[in-house]
Image (cartoon, rainbow, N blue to C red; front, side, top):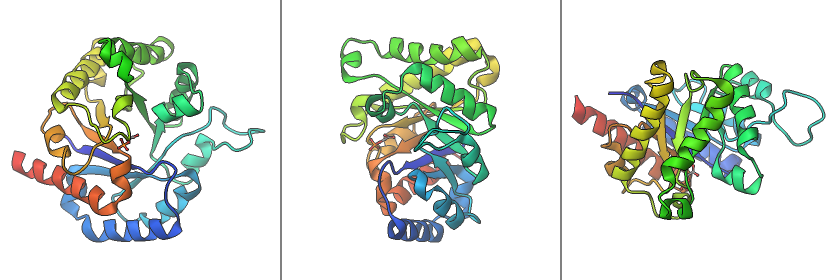
Length: 258
Ligand code: PGA
């Protein structure tokens, strides 16, 4: 069985004290079995990336960035470059999150540029895709996903998704407390995998995470699904005990499969 990729997306939350307590708690409770069976990462706000990185340096926990600019350097006030992320040891970069699409007008062409840049820099993009409530109501989910994937395929070619991660995050499930149905998510993940596989058989092992109101109570049903390879967790990841519970549930599911 494959490792689950479990990421805490703190969004615009945390401070120095929060980070100190959070990391101390995780370091104490995560054991080698947890990190053998899961890939665990934290995505803090940019200003704390290096602080988190330094605190988790000798553990198996990784650091992800929530965003990156499309430019490498120059007169772009307020931005963070991929070169800087690489410089401080970041491994994953989230791209195309619906909150960036919505609040920062990130359209597919910008997301494509960022995705490409992250790949070219040998970091791993986590591409967020997913439908709105209306799309779902109008049974457009698969069409929306195809469109989002095609905007990458069209420019970067068939092998675009090698060494990348996709986070399927139905927009209506993010931060609402209402997660999607695990079996429906399984169907979507299977669809995403076969769509990518049709283009490039070598992308077969792509990791597809689910995100949208995951917590320690509902995660059990998601974890059973064979094509759900991990989770991008917002609200529930802000409580470290809750985040740890999710990790432990993933580890114990794994041990039952042995
Ligand atoms: P949520 O956020 O867990 O609070 O729904 C998930 C995300 O936005 O990545």
